[in-house]
Image (cartoon, rainbow, N blue to C red; front, side):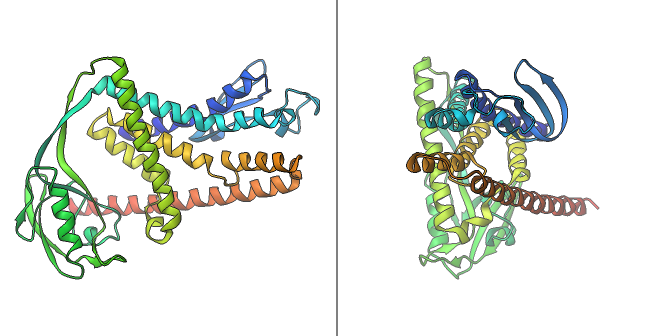
Length: 366
């Protein structure tokens, strides 16, 4: 059920994105002839007065169709309500509305979560540090560390129940490049010792490829008033948005180090399913984070994305006329092929990794 919940969240985010385009177009009187959630074979469709609404087999996608792109449309090409015949500003609003809708939705979800779960009052710290290997190729994973392990001590030094534990563990790893260190970890109710050797990083510090999180649980209180909820939600939204922008910046500037951390639909669903299994309210945080990421990705000036179409509008505004249709279609088709290729590659890679993990788990019970 948690997997279905994660898929449902992704479908809702796509629906929100496409609704943004749809509402922005219809509110300006621009003709829309198709609204589809998903790709592939049609499972259900309804023909409205102007628009065909459809649900398709694969929910990880969607589109809003305009008569401009329909060769069978009987609408005159000079109709002022066609998208291509509208001023640049009107078209820019329609194209960017999906991104804006995802950002607004993320903020509202964060506010909803605060209203339901409450506002963090304090952290109840436990001894140790929660760790998670960044990938299966990392030194930490190869040494036997798994997601959810708690590091209780490093080189015989106990990690206390405080916010200083992550700093102590980080310093011990960074200060011992190419030197073996010993960790005492707790996995469920069992303790064991592991040894690993941090590699020398480009800055001269040790690296093992793990993410560190304080071993603490938040204590919540009820919000004092709606204004407090909206204010804290705004701060959280800002942190997530800035963090997402920084993440994409690191992907560009440190491509070789970060490309292995790029996730596709399979891994995203896997993460969402785990969060839902731990606590169903975590799906709200998951929805907000993915919604912001979806917005940032779509605004990038890449072919076949909203940002690519906005780039074409910018060029049209500077030139005083649009680029020739054959050039635009060629660029968009090339970009679409590349994006589909990347998506298929990530799905195959992550499905293969997931299959190998399942086989490994099965062997444990044989």
